[in-house]
Image 1: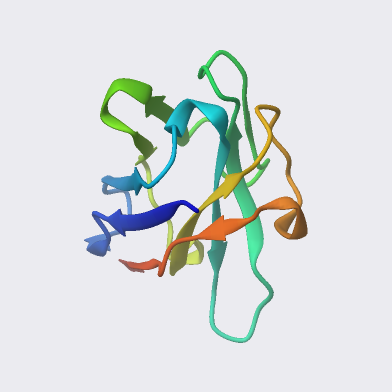
Image 2 (image 1 turned 180 degrees about the vertical axis):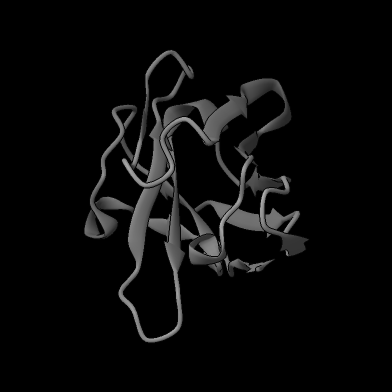
Length: 124
């Protein structure tokens, strides 16, 4: 069992930056591939970024590529999402997720553990 807690969300103006964190506890963090997903009101949960167990391989959704960067620190059992040049369409609840494999995935249903989410609101 892995427990995930997100933090770092908030209200920011268009063009601003935020850094989300996802703190993990319960099992060996490096055994899991990790990801960020987001869900806007009335929309399905969508993939944002994923990272393999070591951090050597990452993938980002086209909508955030060049603006968001996923990373992890296995010594701190923490994953991050640096978000720059934020846009109003980035407004959503952001969730971190863990997968019981070292290889990452873009699919919601391939993740086993989820955090409670953190709200990100970008004002225009």
